[in-house]
View 1 (cartoon, helix red, strand yellow):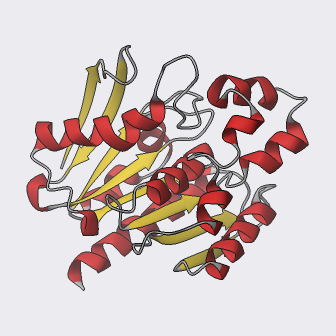
View 2 (cartoon, rainbow, N blue to C red):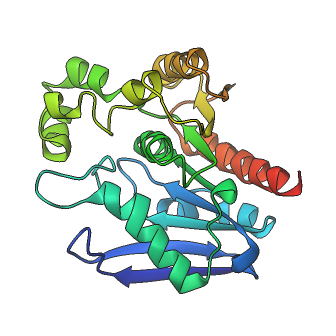
Length: 249
């Protein structure tokens, strides 16, 4: 196993950024997990705060961890296109740099908190690229959160990322809307996990039920804990094990 850190300037961002990539011995034959960080984290958090490296070493899976700051994986009105970067340009660059297959049946996206939302957004909008989604302690319904907390710091943050509530509603960033207006024959599976003491637990439960009602293979797992790394360490271990089991099926 090798861990690479790359500094580069993507066209979609127009500025320097970083990505960490965990590589098995033969990445050309490996499954790929695009693993996204949360609102207060960065590209290093999964490596520093979980046992991801040890888990990845047990499985033939490439893990790609980009830095997206507090973007909520959005193409911002300012012209900084984080969604395009993560869902398109980054994967194309990694495919070229590391000779990855990126077969859709063996490519997955996951994340925690803001990154769990990003995993749902990116996976649902790109069913031609991703077989499945691993969403941990997610923020699936941004419109409800905007209505509830728009007068706090979340309002200016959402304004910067999405422009306005009206621009978010019904867009590629509106996860419940995408789920309830699905038209593609392909449906990525969804695996959700959340701590029972997490304030986001009810909305994760609600979204899982919504996805199930609209025909998605969506499973929700409740685990002891709050919005914390003990939950996400368990979650990423389970995700990598599930990917490995699918490889062997």
